[in-house]
Image (tube, rainbow, N blue to C red; front, side):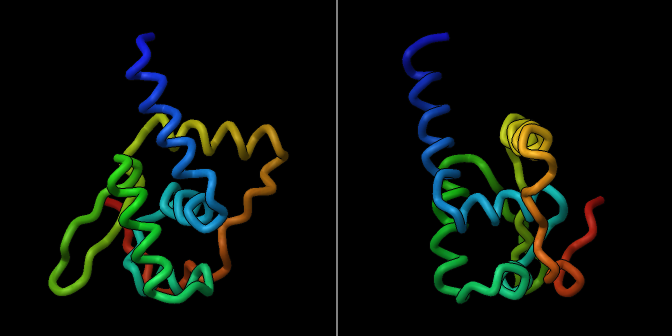
Length: 109
């Protein structure tokens, strides 16, 4: 693997190194969410969620698709999804998904 590939992976890991961004990635590894649904699920203000979504999107970890006036976000990186699953297994599934997913989630096609 070349130096650029390592730099790319390191940037993704840095983006996931923040607790809120890690929580967002964990949530999005399960289901698609709108910003408002993530705010409710994580109990974090909309401005904070939007800022973290922007960082994750810029690193290629998530993507969004517009549906009317809202945007549904999903984890777009299969390697990150696999890494989160490995992390869950290695710590005994103690990466909890939030209780707030009942409202505002978007079913995957």
